[in-house]
Image 1 (cartoon, rainbow, N blue to C red):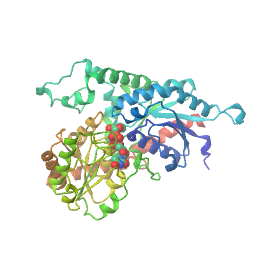
Image 2 (cartoon, protein in one colour):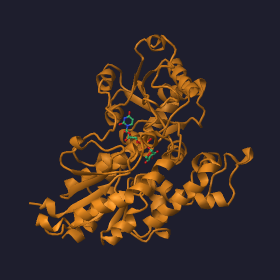
Image 3 (cartoon, rainbow, N blue to C red):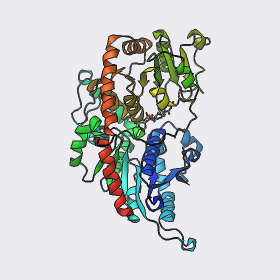
Image 4 (cartoon, helix red, strand yellow):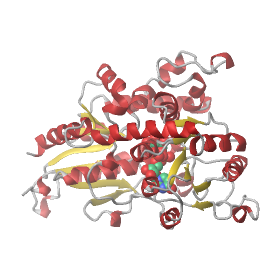
Length: 459
Ligand code: UDX
């Protein structure tokens, strides 16, 4: 029998929903391979430890004020967290590695630290304890490689992009188009802090012991092949984490509205368009209303997640005109947070209007649900180009949040023959990706290699 306690891994997620989910999924995968799991986390967006009784959770102070936790400026939050968390993290790690002499226990054998690439102080801390650090890349790997080039692209003067070049491809950062660049690279006020943060990420990643990638060769072969020009350590593309064969459990920070599932049960197969813009994106009121009217005008059934506070200046959906929901005659449901994995896996879900966060994109691919792409920030623009132009498993809205555009895209996907072709293609992609985590598949082999690698120290 495996001696679980002798093989311990410490995980340190970045406190954003899209980063907590992959880290906790990875924890379950490693637990299933015999490692005991300790999760160090900030007070801000603390994961619900009661949902994961098999793991040990240790909270550290993060120094964020109430107003900073409410900020929409994620770059600012990440900068503050990196400034504030180094000492508490170091102290917490010291206690784990060297329990106090009066506790009578021996120094523990910890295999490694696994943390998010967005933590830029953890490499030096882990080196000071002689603890191997593996970096988790929860982005599409081609974005991870490309985003490190953002400061260089900025220096080369791509911005502002003249209209005549807007559709051109960015050769340094495929398959982005030049018109995507300004939205990825932020405003000029953000350029200095962003470039400096990216510089720190690359400097803190290069000396790490390895990179664990939430992708697989089937989705990222070109960039994985390119990666040895940048990194000299091993890279483990272990596939979408949530489809590995481990027990399901939620790591949602918000309570999912479980009434979505019985509601979907009442609808025909592939008849519902699911709409969700992830955990960070927010909208102004007029864009919110354009989506509302666009969905209503399709006469298709929709399930729409509107996070509280995600419509600027409003608590929730009170800007919908009175009688709007009644006018749908049961063909629409709006919730504050959905059990997304179950919704995408439901037979009634036929399409996904998404912001293309990498988790949502993978979750949709793995269920064979075709997408309508409405990226808002950062990696989402790259994911959306792959979906619409490389794999051709979705339709890109090109940022046009207008009722007619939304209506047209939904009809193309859900009703017209174009949607059938897109659906056929995503089923092929789904099968390839799902095969990768099965025994003998590329991601499964990579996971075996990762487990071997981190077991060496614990042996
Ligand atoms: C952003 C980035 O775009 C993403 O690529 C990056 O890795 C993390 O930050 P986010 O807005 O959180 O992501 O989107 P996404 O990566 O899709 O993650 C959202 C997660 O929340 C998904 O796992 C999704 O299943 C879950 N979710 C979303 C729910 O459980 N319920 C909902 O109602 C909406």
